[in-house]
Length: 251
Length: 184
Image (cartoon, rainbow over the protein chains, first blue to last red):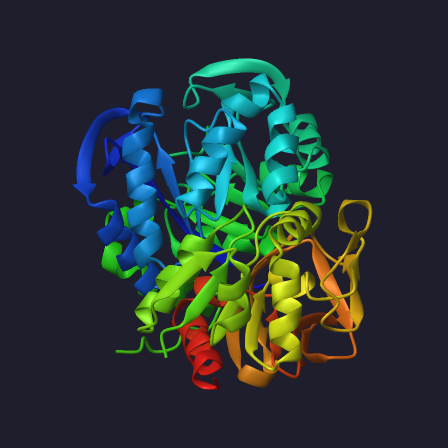
């Protein structure tokens, strides 16, 4: 089985990386291309770029960000936010994204998962699930649906998703650790890899997640200290998790 | 050496391959033109998408025969991921697809572990980790490297195929690509 993956997530609004808690008080933290390169150099195994505005008006801006990131990045990256159709997915993949992440559009029309997977392969389709105690939420975790989390993950898998990005809305932003029980429940129910998300406050938290699942998303823990990613990796490795060996960057 | 053609088959991510080549100082063009593919010093057959639609596109444009011709004339081709799988005789993807038949062997769905296989694995002969994203794998007598029983590289005469994505494998991947190009 592949090595455990550490995946920083960049929230993008209007072509800039922003930081904020629950969409409130967004603060500009930098240029997506510069931060993507910084994280790549620091040993990120992949990146996720999330368009948190996700409005049709912003799609051209996001496409341009994706193109610029693709031209400098030599690791894979997933783009999410505002992917509502096969055309949206095509546009992002042709701009250089390796994978697209579907969230509310997949809930509204699960056949979208199959359509994108049959064109670009399952490995190109991530289904993001914002999970509460039992049910899936939308609108950045503010609106509860009646869809139960584990059955939805199973359906997404059966319809051709290549990975689940599972965010615990209870833990998100709390920095007190991932929801391991939720992660295990979903992972045991599907045959595709699962990325744990929401709650990382320390290397120990990340290591705990990587003991039970395939990959861990990190956000605030790295955004507060973007040059500290290499150190975070070493701490995680010291806790017994095997990550990909990094070699010296060539000049 | 600047004459690199990245084969266009209507789906997928040629941008990253070109960006990686550019970093290594190689200009490239994305093309499905048969004479460009046949004559180029180096051709990359990239890999994203489904086997059936990729082969359909290669057959429709004549790129299939151009790839077979350049192979028979000993010119170098690198197949990446699906691009490597397309070089085999058959694939069981999409209910069965006939490939380019440059190499003897077939392509079957992965049966072990989580599928798709996503992430980095160390490839022993080269001692480096590379990035994988695939649901199908090659079975061939031309295998030159494997990871956990899965073929990750094949080579026959002037065709080299890799299951991983060198263009997405950081400095190790760039170094691998550079070595491929330096052999031409």
